[in-house]
Image (tube, rainbow, N blue to C red; front, side, top):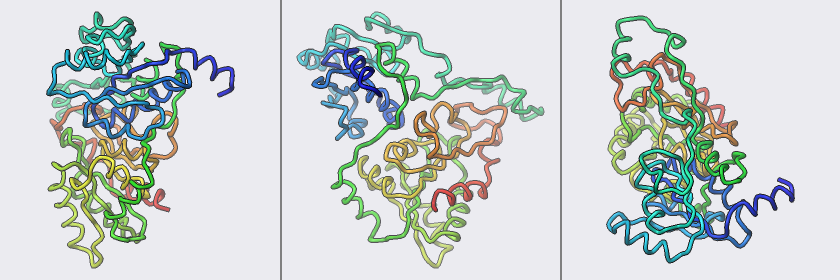
Length: 378
């Protein structure tokens, strides 16, 4: 960016801006490029605040583009939280989530300028609203009844209605571009401290071998999960080629599932090397652990997005969801990640459970996943 364009962008936004952030981990990472571009468009001494629920706030810690993290507390009324926000005298509120609820606190706080995408009956809560590109919507190719019907008839992927998507990163960038902000994508980043990286050593037990992280679960539902058997076969095959250790990552609720996989893998090995850290790490701890890993093998999960933001290459298995929309190949860092997906007529369906034969995931073979991971382990 040259000095002239930088100066022009610096005048685009006022000095005090609050961004109503999103609440899910993957979505939070996908907003980071837009937030960075907003800060670049503010005066050098400007104040940029992020307004988020507690579960997402840790991803913004130590981010140099953010001056303040304001935590939304669901135990308090929106009116009480709006009174607190009003005292901070923000000039502009950018509401990233497209929901009625997310626009309420900036509205009640009477932030003079409130912008966001149109929809969900919130137009009166915003001073400026914009129509979103429909290519950002999670559109099914076929309805659930049509998916069930394909069990009894032959249907090729090219016979199903085409659905076009754009990445969610661009969804947020295109909103802030309406305000004169640079819409050029950039890689998201979670900023970890040296102390946090050093503290993560306790999960690695002084093991200097390269580490493969695996996120084998998916909280949304079984339709996003590759099979247990194929994960087990893949990890065993990778370890037959590379002397590496393996950590299984996930949430507290996913820990029993991860322990089950680890026990099966380690039981067949003379050199057990699979460790379960799922459910034992705080959010920034799992980010630090992922930053220390050579590769993450994953379904379409939150850890996939965290790995992108700490710079760890991923091999992501996709079935029921759409990598063009939410995959790890973010605009701006396309070459670091590999998506493995086999087109089928019913994908994407975005269903939590497959109503037929799980063909989207069953067609992905262990050999192609092993090959992709080994290339990144080198």
